[in-house]
Structure formats: structure tokens, C-alpha cells
Image (tube, rainbow, N blue to C red; front, side):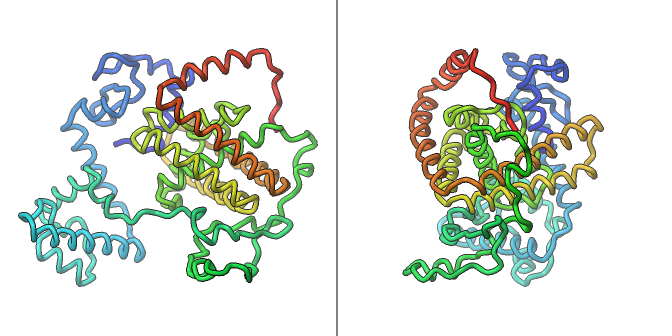
Length: 414
């Protein structure tokens, strides 16, 4: 199983004609219908999609996944927090197995009594402590996604009650102590018990005005760019279950591959174009397995919800996204990759960091009523997009829109 970052960069490279992807014009060795975009890292078979990868050699894919799991387990040095989380997962797994045993025979994925006692006693348990049969069952559970069902679902910070009361200083910096609102009523207890530390903090230093950053008038298309950036942020956090710090480099790579604005692929000029690109990316072969159209529509709802929270919440979001990109930049230096790939990725991340900061300063200057009107515009477009994608009409409509735009004056982006 190749790293996510490798897959994403290959996907983007193959979709843009250039001198670098001439080698990808090879027919898929599995279906022999499409051009291959990927190479199996184990047997070097060229394939075009996830379906062809899974079907090209069951023995190859299972053994490769098993080796990667083993290598990851051996290299990972768990801390106390991760040990505690895994203990909770295994306890719940064991409790479910015990419940199922009342109605049916013991499941193939249950652990031995000796292993269960180690878990319940709080003793440290490694992969090597498992019996041969338990290791096989564990590997099957990882490959099938069974273990992922035991992980508690993550609640996005923007959906928590406390997110409605995010407040920054007049200079855009984080307030040291939030001001209590006497009119919270019955929501006061919910906000008090809500974990405020889950809300991303605002900038630590004052935000400059846009005029201090550039003498050129900001592009009138920045609202469209903001839609793309918010969507990408929600995409990344939901995919990583809210913990992008678990793998900053792959999270940052995902951001520049999903976002047409931060990845410098295409600058949308309308709400329709911005949402169309977002949904096309989400429904593409590289990400369709995450959830496809339904996942994309949920992310659009996230964008609308965040816009209704107001400018301060958006500044906190952009500040968190900037930290994500900066963490990825720091890890690029130690990552093993070709020099040309490292240089290109560093260039993309540096551009994304500067763009995010510029948009953050621009957002801070906008009037509060600007976001509710933008959210309303997105809601109207979302309804028509959902129907078009359901009918499979999106691609033809998008081609027609590009044709009609030919001849329009180009607006230079800051």
C-alpha cells in the first residue's frame, strides 16, 4: 500500500498534461481499457483505479498490506494517550464479542483469554504478544476496516455549541479570556461543558491590513477562493478524524492536491465553479472511496455552517490551516523523496501558506453580513448541483460554461 501522499501527487500529475506524465500513457494491465495512472509498489503492475488495484492480484495486495501494517507497528512508539485509546477500543471490542457469544458461536476475530486478561489488567500489549492465529485475525480486521468501526466518531469543532461564541480582538488576535454572555439561557451549561480547547486558536500576533500586504486592489474573486479553501479544510479534518497532527506532511499534501486554489490548478470565478471543482475532486477515482457525492454534499453543508459562524470563526479556521501547512513544510526536509519532488512540494506548500495568510487578513476586514449572503448563494447552487450530479450532467454543463467564458477579461489575482 503506497503512501497517501504518493497516490495524491500521482493523481494530480496524471490529470494535467505535461512532459512529466508522458510515462503514464500506458494502458492499464488489468482492465486494458483506461490509461494507467499508478504502479503497484510490489509487483510493478500498471493500473488505472482502486478497483483494478484490488483485483490485479489478491495475494499481492494482502501481503503488501500485511507487511506495511507490521512495519508501521514496529516503528510506532506509542505514548500514554495512544495506549489508553487503544485499550478502550480493545475493551469495547471484547465486550461486543462477549455479547455476540450469547446468540452465536464464538467469532473468528475474538482474542484468547490470556490476551484479554493482559488487556483488562492494563499491561502493555504488543503485536508480538499475540498468538499466530490472533495476528492473522488482527490483520484481517485491519484489512477489512472492522477495527475502524470501533473508533468513536469525531465531532467537528464548528458543530459544537461553543463555536457560536468564538470572539477575537479587534486586531484579529485570540482573546485571553472569553467574555461571558448573560443571555445564553439554557445553552449556558452546554457551552460550559464543551471542550473549548478543541476550537482552533486565533492568530498570536495582530493581523495587518490588506493594504499593508500589497498595493494592488484585492481580487473580487476572493470569496470564491475562500469557498474552495474552507471546503478543503473540512475535507482534510473529516478524513483525519480531526487530528491532522497525526501526519502533518500527508495532511498538507492532501490540502494542496484537493484545493484548486492552494494547489494552483484553477481559480474559480463563480460559486458554481468553486463547488463544481470541489465535488468533482471528491467524486474522482482518487477520493471516491471516502464517500463520493454524499460526502461532498456534507462538506458543502460544513462550509455553509462555518460561514454562518462569522468572520472570527473563519479566521480561526484559516489560522489552523496555516499551522497545518507550516507543520507539513517542516517535515518535508526529513521525508525521503526525490529532490525534484521535494522542491516542487516545498514550493506548493510555501505558496499555500502565503495565500492562506493573505485570505485570513482579507476575511478579518470584511463586514459581518458578507458571510450570510455568501452562505445563501452556496445553498442555492448546492441544490441544483446535487440534482445535476445525480443525473450525471455535471461534466457536459461544465464544458459549456468554460466555452461561454472564452473572451472574458482576465482578473489578476493578488
